[in-house]
Length: 201
Image 1: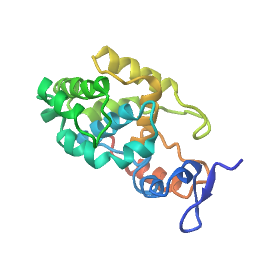
Image 2 (image 1 turned 90 degrees about the vertical axis):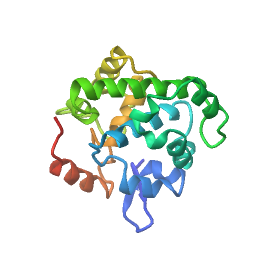
Image 3 (image 1 turned 90 degrees about the horizontal axis):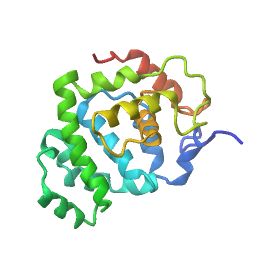
Image 4 (image 1 turned 135 degrees about the vertical axis):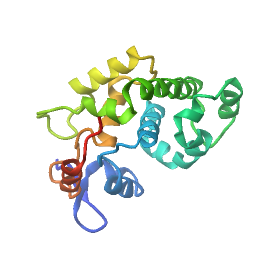
C-alpha cells in the first residue's frame, strides 16, 4: 500500500492526512518543518504529551484552548502556576482534563527554565539529538535510538510524560527528523528547510 494519498491539489501527501480534513494544513505548513523557537518547542512537546492515548485530531482541535489555558506555552509563566491553576485547568472543558498531564506541563515548565539556565536554550539542547545516518523508512516505527536517548536524558533532568514514543512524535513534529513519506510532495520542502537551517547551539 502506498504511503500517500492525493492532497487537495492532487499532489501526494502522507497517508495519515486522510484521517481528517484539517490535517492537510497542519501537514503542509508545520509537521516536520524545523523549529528552533523555545516557546514553540515547549508547546509541541506539551501537546505531544497530552496526545498520549488520544487522537491527534482531538489535540489539534483544542490547540487554541490549550494555548489560552497555559499562557501561550510561555514556560516561564507556566512555571509559576500553583495548585489553584491546576484546579482551574481541571475545570476547563476546552482542554484535556488529565491531572497527571496538567501537572506534568507545570513540572516541565520548571525543568525548561532550568534547561535554559544551564544550556542556553531549549533549542540548543534538543538539536544535539538530531540523528545522523538514520536509515529507517519514513513512518515505519514509533521510536528510535535518538528518541530513546532524548527521552532518557529528559527524564534524568526531571521531565515527565516524555516516554520514547512521545519523544519520537515530537521529533517528527519539530523537524529533528524528516519523516514525511518518501513520495510525499512536502518531503522535499522539509528537506530544503532543514538544509537551510542554522542549527542552534
